[in-house]
Figure (cartoon, rainbow, N blue to C red):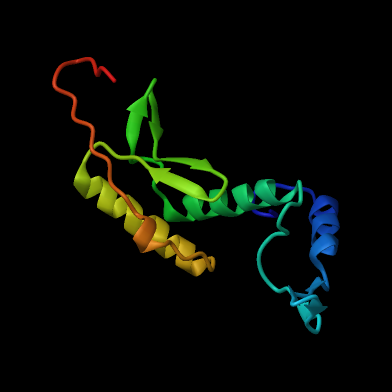
Amino acid sequence: MTEMGFPQHLISMIASLYHNQKATIRRNKANCEPFNIEKGVRQGCILSPHLFNLYTEQIMRQADIDDMGINIGGRDITNLRYADDTALLSDNLTSMKTIFHRVNNAGQQAGLLLNAKKRQRLCIYQQAKSLVM
């Protein structure tokens, strides 16, 4: 968040929300011993989607894919994200492979693993100057 220009007092406030988190698991009407939560965002917390978006934004910046993707309205669009789903966009297969590998490498460095089983490819071919969907 510091690299993105957030003020230190806001970063400290958010960090304090996540400091010394503990959880238990309830099974058969009994709770296990509390354990420390060291990674991730709180499930159901209103702040969690925003924190995850910041996390994935930093991964996309580290991947250095801004000059790739598809051009829409004069802008290169390389990805669309919602919650924990990401669609990578490219106008050719070679570029798509490069985008995927760069995002995958940046994600691994940040501790994010992409699920290869959920990976899909959708190809849309445009024959004329307009694309009808």
